[in-house]
Image (tube, rainbow, N blue to C red; front, side, top):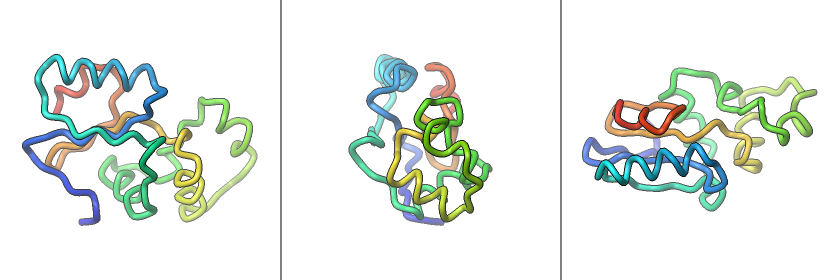
Length: 121
């Protein structure tokens, strides 16, 4: 499909190192002995293609990848009606606004809402 490589042997875990939910899910996965490839979105910028692919894998629009509940969104983006390309650019340069953590394994992709969600993969 795109440039995100997946494997049935490991979970690729996209997260923010500042997120408590992500830290809890990561700790849970490690405690369960799940093989994890960690990708901290604050240290590793996603490409536009990767952002689009994550949205497609989650069966949502790119705009729906944006966490509209965080202060950074409300302060800087709430007043705008942006195109898909514009949202991709906003996410690339402001990775703190993306909903996360996102976990992938093989053909499955989920937005992790609770630490135990990772076992759904």
